[in-house]
Image (cartoon, rainbow, N blue to C red; front, side, top):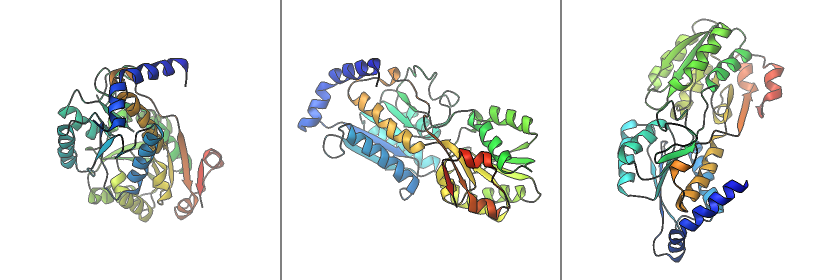
Length: 327
């Protein structure tokens, strides 16, 4: 921690001393609303929530002791997300934590005063969540999970591991992902690599199956899966395997579940880092004064078993850069 951060924390702590003191004495416990756009039985979501609560405890905030956590599991259904966002806002918590563009947008429609901290998000400026990164100015700040330049990086990696690539499906859910943030870098990479990008918005397993089957009809098809598709990872991985379509994914858990290759930020770390902003806001800091932070930890994972099944030889350039190799 540098001197400026220390002074900021010290000043924030002094300003919020009455709140912290009341919480410790049990007179008035701060409330944290948490809106998870995942199913409650989703292991990936549980890992993120666990990292957040452990980090909060390390900072002195323990659910049921000196803070109360109101947790809601919304799944990926946009109507349920909106309903639960309205419900959480109605509880008037001291702060709300979430991730994902549609979830944050739903919360913003309900409140412009309750602080909102996001843990993992595409480009928040392109998504119109905040006007700028260094000073968000409103009631929303947090930790961006993905940078726009990753779009081109994913396509480059797909071309590297599947050198015969001619066409690449760009798969995303239009309800849950701000795919437009990644398209400029994807299009630039596609021109450079002479790969035809095929835009593939999908909203259900049937559309996923149709899109991947079409990619596999002729040699040279590949797939880039955008963030926001967690709820559909099993049918995507399965369809890619059945149709012999190499695919690159934005997070490592896809590859641990049978996908070919992933590159992206450690989103669990974003949830861990989000606890630091929650702590600072509960101690008096304002979201508008806390800059949106970009990811600091990235990881590449490759599945050799999947590569072999697809008839691909993983190049040394990927093997040397991989943080994890699944055999």
